[in-house]
Image: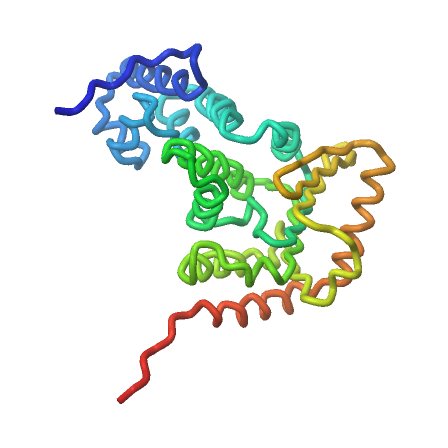
Length: 282
């Protein structure tokens, strides 16, 4: 016999508030879960889980719910709050700036940056980083990071520039299948109107002494904030001296990296490492 759903408390968490508001708006609209499922193209199981607080609303469901109910940006705003609940506190300010940035530049020394990660890649990271995490915690972290990637699909997205150490392509996360999917996901973004990816090959690290992750966030007023993270510790800098130094380091790294075309070729070559071997013909 299944357990009854717990009673939601909007004051307890943003997730509960989201579920309460979804149920309220659905009932006002006179829609069953089946009918709403057809409208927003999400499963009834997922919608029920969101309503009962058992699941997080996977992007881009919030935009679809606002469109279905005519609620402006209500659910999109609630999703922003839910997302912050499942993001490390040290990253809060960076997230706030990321949402408003006109240009985002990032460097990854050993891991693919979050905005470029596939779901399987990020899920592996969250699972292996702290083996004691519950499935609910992992789901929350994955949903929050997927939510960040909505910025890539905006009508007018920021200008993105990523520099990846070659180590990020060769550091196996989740096994060959996960890495194949991850590297293939990079290729369409290597050089587009709004995205650029460069790979810093082995031997280029002497151009700039950076480790971990560096994110440079430039707002429409041309002010820039730097966020740097290493070994689980992250810090935001907005003083002119530090930001200037970080921008210069990034520019050095950019100058030493391969061109976008050469980077795509290296990513393609590295993909061969993760391709399944065909059995020898007899």
